[in-house]
Image (cartoon, rainbow, N blue to C red; front, top):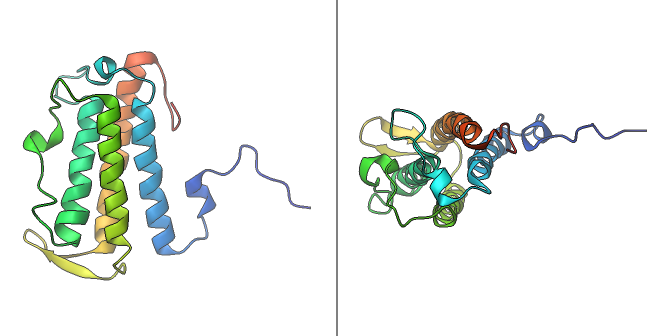
Length: 170
């Protein structure tokens, strides 16, 4: 008789014996979700508070990550540089009228488009990239996992400063 683990397995644990692409996609989606959950339940005012000397805010993180998704998946991988154009200040500065819901929706649209673009490529497929020469989808996945996970950690610290919530779900 097999028993279910307690607590249940997280998405990253569920792919422990998965194929490379499944593991990469799962880890990227895991951190994408964490970033979104870090702003969940916050007002726009709370999520736009500067709590560190740099211009980093929770809203800025979301906007920056949406820009990074577009840059790498739409601009570089799909070869549509006009669609992957970075926003001013790398997205860190958010205008006063953009709210949490707007930026979450924009980030989720960017991630959905990234998934659609990536689905057309194999991990070993390479595309031109001015700075690096060529990059593979595999490299783009690893780069986005690193970028998103790093900023998820920043978001965790910022959220803790706002209301004490920490961890994957808080």
